[in-house]
Amino acid sequence: MEVENLLRRTLYQNEADLEEIASVSVIVCSYNRANSLRETLMALEELETYPDLSLEVIVVDNNSTDHTRQTVEEARKSWSSLRYVFEGRQGLSYARNKGIEAAVGEVILFTDDDVIPESDWVIKTVFGMKKYDASACGGYIAPIWEVPPPAWLKERFYGFFAVRIDREDDYLIDSSSQAPYGANMAFRRDVFDKVGGFDVSRGRKGKLLSSGEDGEIFDRILASGMKAVFLGGARVNHKVEAFRLTKEYMRKWRYQTSRNKAIALGLPGKRRLCNVPLYVFPQTARALARSIVSRIASPEDEAFSREIIFYHFLGTIRGLWDNRHQGDGHDSCSTRA
Image (cartoon, helix red, strand yellow):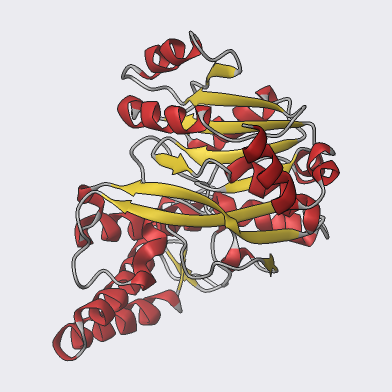
């Protein structure tokens, strides 16, 4: 153990840089994945720390109907710094905000119940945030494929599975398009005092596939002038189940995510039909035409990428339709200026 500590101190050059941050909270939001959660907790219990660091792990049970609570209570018998919190309002953003309320750490790390962090994840995250004077960060997410992915599933689709392996270096995050995934992201606690918590109108809710809450909060962070970085050495491993490696799953994810975004944000445009700006209809028709042509003339991955764009438009139209009462208080499907 002394040798390991010596090597770690040599690696990070200045132990005082690490010890300046005295407390860390790791938040795991979970919904009906008790068996996978058990493996995540086993990995979290083995995390490396440094002297005088106070580390707690909080599992936020987002209204699970399986044995999630029993899994956490069993682990707590030998792990005093593990805590269980229940959030009955369905939605990942609700669960994350509940975890923030419960956390006591100066730095708050988020991961998921299907993730296996590397043993030095906390140390490299904390050191990286200190090194770059960052208020928020994300890191590398490697896949653990339950089965080998099909040949058409190229790296361009990895975002559907919260996998990020495109870069291994450290770099400044300067737009929400570079926002980390929730499987591996961290914030200084005062970030939430300045910009608020996660948008509860965005993100996954139970079995409803959706996203966007991570990018939205990073938009607010960057707009406030705070610094965010990507840390290539802060790594976790994300399990990707076989059922997700299908076109059906990815179509559903794209459709529901775009629907959710349209409900939350809407689209600009005065001339509308059923709350859908008129310019959206020819865009959707062009996306469909390109999808059909690509299916005939393009490689399978390119053809499916075009198809996904079409599903984005379908989801957007459905979200705007679902939100058609907003503003004028009535359901009008006539064209209006």
